[in-house]
Length: 393
Image 1 (spheres, rainbow, N blue to C red):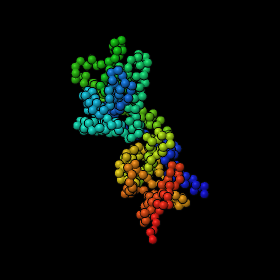
Image 2: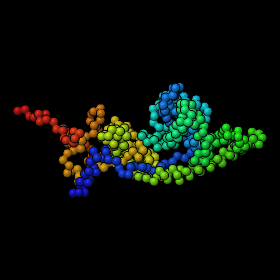
Image 3: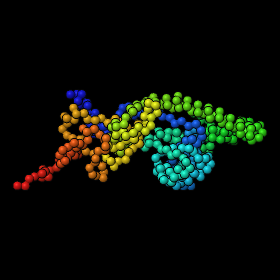
Image 4: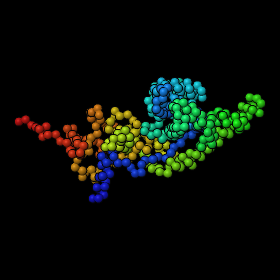
């Protein structure tokens, strides 16, 4: 009996929508292999207080290989403004990147940005919703940017857009912990000339003794080849020994197979204290990516409703759905409440949806059978007796 009670509690639909699994779902860290500058570039929008010049947002563009960062102050974050800034201020200065990785913000998913990427041959990728770790490099730089701007304002006063280029230059000319080179050096093949060079003229090896352009170009190619190889090696070691090791300490990875039923984390409604934290169930339709043993991204569908579009979500937003077993469900005194949509209307199961015992009214010969509803307190709602069927004599 105690086992049945525990099993019944685990299969309670209301409990599953509120209870968070312990430990929380956490997949192993995945990696993206980059071997050259501009192979993959990430972009993000950072909102800051409005300045006297009308600037409110910062467009952050960072190269995955060199870690070279560009910061642009913007008055708004419309798609037209972002597209113009990407083309005029980034592409026309550094060249066309191979891949542009962003979140699912409307300014990046708008048609004007999509057309710009197709026109220039840029592969556009995006993160999964409500999972900022998918673009962790830029998110981490945003924290550094905010800290540096705050220090500048506390020390010198003024407004943040006055120091944006200074902070960007300092970051790009500082040796990065993962590559062991400065982003400026990996992007341009030489170290930047800074005010300190006036005091120490021979600090940089500028190869002026080469004498002519071909010798300088040959030496530059040789230096960049060695630097790129060392940067790739250091970045791989940093990812393996530091970042991935730290991230994977608390891994709780439950890979799902195609056809499995899952709950989906609902962070929007979770902001309300009494709202459910999970919604569903959903059915796994496809495993999109897999890095060795770790499946990280899934395409899921609502098996009850053909109108719902498929969702692409990260593993960390899913948890297993517990089906009611016949041994427990036979002892229940009420049927589960039906699933409703805000637009009303009956829901039809998808093809290959939930198992037969979990589909509402599945296989019922009497089409007039109606599953009773329930109030917020859990009491069964029954229509008055005057609404029951009657026979005229």
